[in-house]
Length: 167
Image (tube, rainbow, N blue to C red):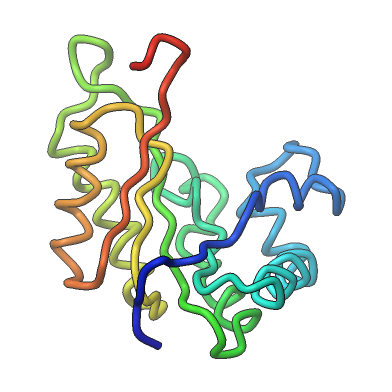
């Protein structure tokens, strides 16, 4: 499948998971692995509605957030099954929750390393492109882009979130 614009992406997966019983007691990625039928139902609905890209449920699936659960990079195949060859699969990367100095203790290299682990797993799983989403700082987005470029030449989409002050 070739990428052509305009490109129709899938929708509010978190909200849809909540409608199906996800309460936030565990990570969304852990819940999806325990309830694969829920994500399959959501994503099939998005494909039927015209989505050309499905985000694999890897929004918070970076080493920083998921190492303790032992579920790092195990969700991409769920989206591939739901897509049934009718949509592209986007590896979804989000903020790590770490902050660079002076706001936090993380180094830029540490952020790149965390994102690179996630991107490598998503690349190995066979995603078609990457979405780096809900970023709050250019440095975090840059770290994620550099990490993806360390493992792949596939397309990258980047989105940011802004506060009420436009930051």
